[in-house]
Figure (spheres, rainbow, N blue to C red):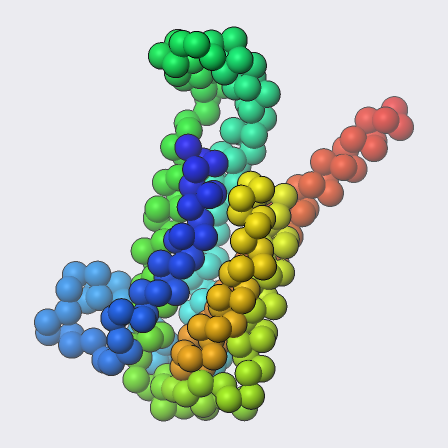
Length: 251
């Protein structure tokens, strides 16, 4: 199940990207807003305004602040998802043997697989639930940036946050950080997902050329956080494992 969700990750990313294309970027009517917008998107938008007031009225820094806060809040879910993935990976050799042993009996194969999960205390859905919780939160942040009109009336560095970057610097950075994010996470990807490592950066670059700069700026912040997070979670774990192996050999 976890592997299936990893394969669907690009589709979730695409859903986030395209959700702004269909919903427009006008302000949300607070009185007629739906439940999701009223109780999640609008409060995040208000936090963006509040943080900008305390960050020299710089919405570029406000987007960074709120992105960091939200990503740190959901970090425990990310770690839980990672641990569940590692547990599933550890059982893959046993699952493969079981599939070979009962290749002509799908029902028996399923029963034995579930027994294996129970014996090792592994919940195959544990890696999926954190992802399902994270997605609405990240989409809400995305929508808050899209619909906050104050953001679109401000500048940050060389950018007018409400207009496209005609220098194409920001789209290039967004594409580069997207590629680096996938590169860092490559060890956790299936071969099918690794094939998308060059497709999604190009897709992000093309979309960033037509979107208001506030949105690609958010992608850059989010991608950078993911790169650092993935290094410490995946890369750090790998290095630690390597050190332990070397230590074992030295003994």
